[in-house]
Length: 226
Image 1 (tube, rainbow, N blue to C red):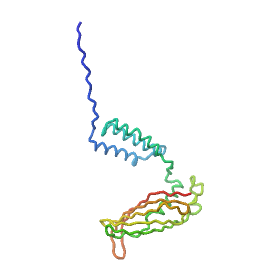
Image 2: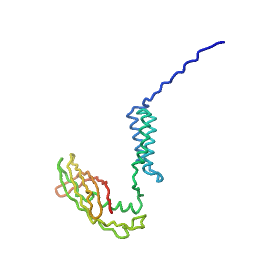
Image 3: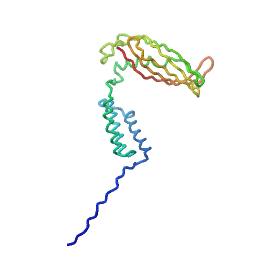
Image 4: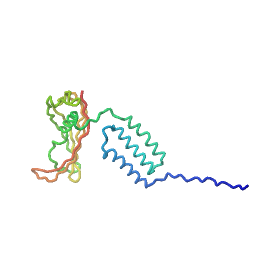
């Protein structure tokens, strides 16, 4: 009877090398997250934390495919992230843009923007000027204050007739200047504001008597009332 030796099994090499250069992989993964979070509209049926979980899942899949780091490490980084996203979920409700409550928020946001400043003038680089701004908040009518619960309940929106805001202007090179304005969290009229506004500006044409310039500005913050 003939006998033979069975061939020994050959172990195939296991590789976890990057499919593309790590820098390219990192750029593709970040681009995936940015596209999901900022370019693709979030369906109304999906909450903001759930949409972030989707972005994390997609980035984890991309990391497993491109392998900028070992696959096990990618899984370990991606698995705890959905739980963390749920743990930091805020109870703040995101209002649709056309709700009456949103109209009230837009009204007070527009009333407190850095839009009433004088035209930009050339400042020496490093020059600092400090000022105090007083803004008037026009009172709303009874009909305009009917914004609660889809416009069925009146809200007291005439608490503060004005607000005070210190501002600092810093001269920058290139005839640019930076403005920083802050409403400190000091309780007045039953509300506690905390608003930070920034602006960058530059004169385009100026003479001793008049000036034309450009200004870009924005504001972030919160206002809490009783």
